[in-house]
Length: 417
Image (cartoon, rainbow, N blue to C red; front, side, top):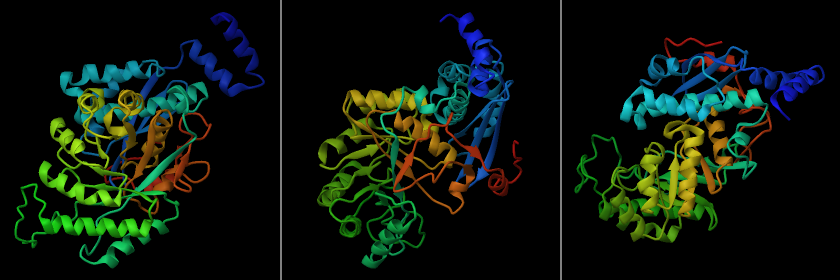
């Protein structure tokens, strides 16, 4: 059917089915253009940068950029002018345009990519609303209807006390979301920020693991395995704190507890060092949350320096870029997981990308606060039985809850309306 015939049919059908036909007809007439980009900061577990892209049709999309200072200024002062008046369905073009014209070569990483990612996420929501389709369908469609989650727990209160570890697991299992996977901290021993910690062998600037540290961490993880049973899935976090030899020793001691992964064992910038750890141990090594775009993930993947690529989707390039990273990893049979400190906006958007990735396995929910899921209006619970279910509603199928958002705006922020 040619454009003229389709447009005539769309306009005729609008009387019976106005919403999707009107949207399609308006788009074909070239009347949907970006008119504004807004950003507001909501103080949640972190300072969430929520983004709204508006158009002259009245349709809009919402998204979220990774938390951090300076993101809002970049969104409004540097990136917004680049996309005003543009066709919002050219999502990849606009994302590329923002990076290309905002900071030159420096735009491939850091806060600029974070800001562009948040706008990209809002554009996919907008595109779904224009085309009356879930965002996942615009990324190639669903490999899965549900996305599995793991719950990240913080450091235990008393690392030498077995009861403290058992209480920690019991709290995680008792949460109402029905978690089937978890992550526990393997880097809180010794304490990271205790000025009174004077144990021999430690230096606050060195990447040291003493024999006593390794014993304490291993004992804690053995207790977690006992509490979760032989089939329970849990990852172990290391937060890039250790050197290669010490963390290899630790990982070998952890092999009997069969964790889902050991995360970020050494600093992220040295791929060869990460590969040395990955090749030396028999538990999966997971890393990637501090990398940006395909360019930074490429050497990690090509050298097969990890077993799991851990993408923070609102930080590392948005939905499509993250899918491209996952597709590259799939060429090497490396599976994908998602790091995530986001509000429900960024979390649900990330799930649409995760559902479109062939080898995606599990998505994070980090720190939780009681009103987290109330930030958005959503059909049914956001997470149930440890999974998020992708809806068939346009875009991400969510709207902000203005009462909750207004109650938690960062100082000086105004609700965008």
